Length: 446
Image (cartoon, rainbow, N blue to C red):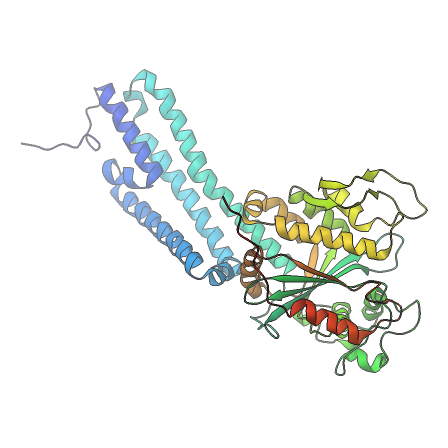
């Protein structure tokens, strides 16, 4: 008695059998590409495709397990440019493989032998399978390439760096290089001190118009400015950046480390001002900053008092009202930079409001749903000497930081006199701000 398989050797004269067979083959191909070929077609192609599918599943399972068990390592691997190249090639390979198996399965289904009423739904299912399989894998490969290019454009080379006294420090500089300016001057300065164990963040606002910034012995600026950056109104802290740009010989190794003489000078100055070492800098273009806000879908900020869209002596273009506001990039930039009836210290507070809002709202869901826009905006937004090898660790700390309130210290009057600063007092204020153990946010009760 001979045994026949209804999948490999069907009765092509029975439309009902052929329709059921078509649905089975196409459904199996969608779940496990290559399985239809093992049952009804080229077994060699089937074995190859099924094997490739199992390898993909194993990689995904291993990645999920690593993320759950050792998140920093998983994030470090996921932000490695070489790994992203391999991942992109793998996704492209799988997209092509899924295309081949789907088209081949459609041929094996023998549409002309199925019921007339089933042919349209079967063809539609094939189209949807191509979108879900080949389309999804192809788009994932594209996004992987976008992310890889953004990482390469923004971040530097280098290895893992240990925290100093249990904390990482990153200096955020908002670059202001308008048409009416000669060169670039940092319009916003924020030192972020991050607890290496918990991820808790302290943001220290430093006035751009601070006088007499000191330098520690050993700094290349010590010999040039032994009494601090002190030459009157031409030596505000922000003016050190263009001065250092004209003296690259002070930091001959800066370029090789992914930095510049100007950024290194700002590190040394802020270290002297605050009393704590600065490990990394991030220079953010204030105009490109608006593009990142838009890529995030806007930011929600609580405005304490109405803020005019204008500058001192200029035209007012409207008002940002008090209360909780969702700001697009243009509005957020006005809020952070408006000078109308405001002091530099008011602007500092507004800038910290925007930065804190971005830190709070840059969650995994936002990154995933707006990844392409965020990556493209970031590519032209920032320059940093943070190495790519540190991204996994910092991403993990950023996720952990959401459990804690962001502490803020503004080095402004009346506590700090920006014209005649008491740097010993500033050092005490900074140590007090970063030394207390962080207190987790209370867990909301259901």
